[in-house]
Each structure stands twice: as C-alpha cells, then as structure tokens.
Image 1 (cartoon, rainbow, N blue to C red):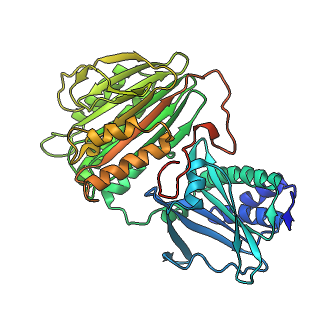
Image 2: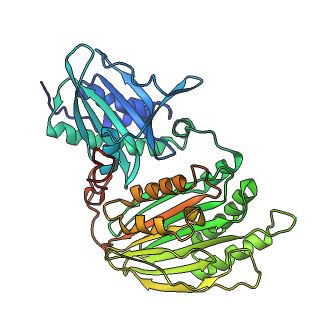
Length: 438
C-alpha cells in the first residue's frame, strides 16, 4: 500500500498552532499532519543542547498504534512532562540531521505488518531544530515525502514562535542541570547557532567548562553587513559570566547605535573599566570583533588580545595576520586598530577561544581538522571541533571551548537556494557505516 498525497489545509495548521497553548502548539500541528496522512504515530524530536542527540518531546498516539513506546528508555520527567534522550548512533535520525534530507524506512510492526518511518528535518535557515518523526501505514509517495518536508519546515517556525513563551523546549533540550554561571552564559548566546544566507553560511558552538569560563560568540545580520564577535572573559564562574555579559552587552549596544567597529571596541573597553565587578576591578576580556560587507566580501576585524582566526582557502590553511591590541577592560588608554582583508568565494574562516587548544598547545589537531573539513557544513564542523576538544581534555575541560565558523560564498545579490529551511548543496556528506563521511 502506498500513502498518497492528501492536501493539507495551511489555515487549519496555523489555526491549530494559534489556538493551542505554547506547550501544545507543536504537538497540535504535528497531529494535524498525522490526521491528513493517516499516520499511526507522530513525534517531534528536538535537538539536545549537547548537539549529540535528540530528545523526544511531543508524542501524539493515534488509532491502531502498535509500534511500541519508543519513549521508555532514557526518559526524564518533570511534573506532567516527559522527555526521552536519543543519542546519535550514526543511524537514520543522525543522517537526516546531518544531510538535511528526509529519511524513509520500512520497519516491521508488532503485528507483523510493515510500517513506514519518516524522519524529516525541522530546520530554519540552516538551524537544525530537530526532527519530525511519523509512522505511516503505507509507503509514502514522493509527493507525500516532499510535503512532509515542507510541513516540517513550517513546524520550525512554530517552535521558534512558541519557545519564547514557555520553558518546555529549553527543559527538553537540557540533559544536564545548569549552574548559575552557565544559565547567565547561555542567555548571552544568539537564539540560533546557525545561519544560512545566499552570501554565507555561519555556525557557532560553545562547549562549557565545568566552571564556566566566560566565553561568548555572537552575530547579527544587517541589510548589507554581517556583524561577528567571539569573546573570552577572564576567570571562571559567575564573575566570568558577568564580565562576559557586560562585554557582549556593550558590543551589542554600540552596534545597535550604529557605531563603527573601532567605536564599538572603545565603548566596550570603557564599559568594563567603568563598571568593575570585583573590588580589584581587574576584569577583562579578549576578543575578535568583525564586520563583513556582504556586497564586496571586505572584512574588517579588531583583535583585542585574542588568538588569530584560521583561514582555509583553496585547501591551504593559514592564520590571519591581524593588528593585536589589549583585551577589553585592561587599560583605560587602550586604542584599537582594525585590519582589512578581502574574502574570496570558497573561503572558510574559523574563530576559536583558547579552550579549543587545551592539551593541544600547538593546535595541530585543530588545524588538521579544519584543513580536512571541506565535506562538513559549518554546523557539523563546530560540533566536531568541540568533540575533539572534549576528547583531548579527557571530557573535563578546564576552560570553555568556543568556535565560530564562517563560509563565504559571495552571492549576496542572488536568491538563496533552499529546500525546507536548508541548502542541500551545502549540507554535510552522509556518514558511512563506520561513523565517518562517505
């Protein structure tokens, strides 16, 4: 039996999202899809905050459910909510997230009749929010698969719109409790780790130390400019998080007032000096602050005492030769200089904090991984680099390990070529059976 296309009423889907409470909006939209397709089961799997698995948050059993309860193992409870952790294992779920393609699999049910499992990425501008999982009574046609992919894209906007009104999605993503300093730090990061546009692809990642080290990354897209920053506040714990908060708050405020890059740097230096957190007033933060002209590929960078970025161009890896000035908040008389460089299509820039070099002072493994990263989307590369840093540190980082990756495509005036929230041509290569890229 083949599941044929059943047109979805978009008005009904949106009405279901708006009429439900924020905690029920996602399962209600998923239920509308399930009813239209005659699905046996539908679930929303949200990305775990660790980036190394998924969490089944919403589950809507329908008639004839005989595929068992996949939520039982690794289940967490809080009041009436439940979440099941599903670590990546190289299987279809990870493949769907990695390649950003819908996966269709025939699976036997308890009754002996085949069920068709469909896994569709829930993605917005390359931000891999999770997966929509359906079990269908028959093999879906290509039209149905395409429609499921489009509805999964709509579901991404439902999640984005509703997670600002409830802690449910945040709770579901957290497989570990956060300390106060971690809570402060997480609130500083941009809501989306990834952003795809015609001219660039960008992804960031922060792997926190046990005692938070005060790292941040940030980006903001204007009409013709992309603003970037990576900062590393001194110290650990709440004090480092507060310094990071002041540093990033000043950078954002200055940017939003339309100040130049050098004015942003000076304002941030002044802010940290004028608002000491400790009695000694010795707080400071190193950082890289950049502004990319999307029309020309001209990049302006201020280096405030930080590790220079890596540039991968035509297979050759170098570090950028930048003018280096003092960290923000170190000296009242500090002045800042900007270095100008021109990007060419195909360039990959990687910004890191020193936690990425822990137990690897020469950066040999980091450099090798970046050099061999052509097959990886920035979203996959930053997580891979974080995995390497964790492994090198024996899974006990002494300092935050943070990375920001920017791919420059140079097509600002062109339309973005996307399918259901992602650009297929830029996705990572699929994993092989041994867990490596094919």
